[in-house]
Length: 204
Image (cartoon, rainbow, N blue to C red; front, side, top):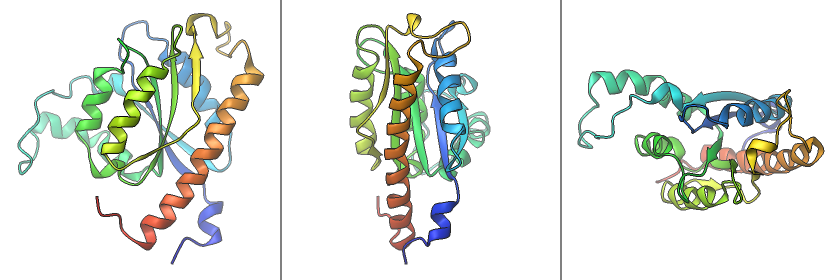
């Protein structure tokens, strides 16, 4: 059976992935603001996964039939259970050379079923493009992993001038509303896909 009404009253688990690991990154201020928006909602609980803590995850993958080496396994223990437990994801990403950070792709590729049949929203930032070209690339990647990406995004164009000294967007009303719309869509898809997974386990 599909989820009952009590399931829909329980806060959904949102994993917010901070993907930039560059020194002096703008991702921290963007993430702090967004987590404040999502965390203030009674229908969501937020788990922040900062990839700066996973930079030692190797680029060399073990054969598919073997378990990772001890060091890699220890690092994965810090993130894999949290991805698996999440009902949905929000990726906070800059744009590097028309795409997204290598650290993000590495963490994505170390996992598979953790993404299946779950919704993913995006908060992007950058220069003139606001990171939207990175988001378009990520939509292709996550489609291959059987995930559903949310249509509406939150995008900061010219991010260096978009926040005040208190870490709030200069145009708070606009961005708070944009975040609300994206999170409302994410919540709808979260319930729909979670109910579907419970009724019929997804065959990825």
